[in-house]
Length: 184
Image 1: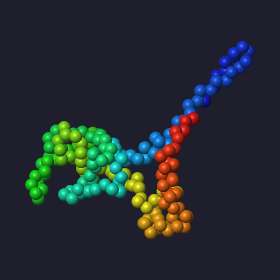
Image 2: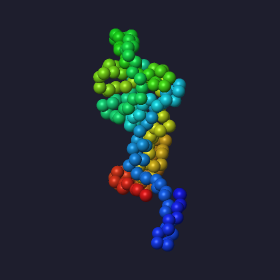
Image 3: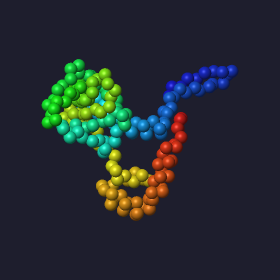
Image 4: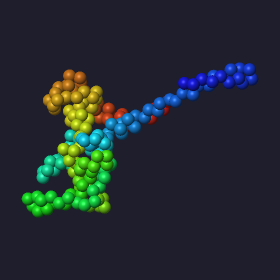
């Protein structure tokens, strides 16, 4: 840091101005909770959500990924196209209210309700949106030590070998929720 010597009544005083980082366990946990989706063409930030990637459903009609804003945090950083797109389906026509990348103007998502309506279901176009699959959490992760397994049998074997009980997992989850904020 920067140092300055001040003379106070004949005695030198050393003053240091140094910024200390602030660590908050809660902040780190929240950042880890959110997934960011980008435009495949220009890498612009399109969507932030806390939806679990492993549980994202796909739409039967076109395979689009479905985000439910009623159940999850869904924040869109897109431009809303003015006109709706009409798509012919087996059971009639469908209106799509399209969202475009705010940077390169590529179609990236759509909703089935007008842009004025409350956001409910958002359909992401897999061909245009880069999904952060690398951040997908494995359903077979030991909650005691964080060890990631390939399947349920491997997880059970790990728990048995390491003697990681369900009770220990519950204690670990409880202690994660009650971590103090560390400043300084």
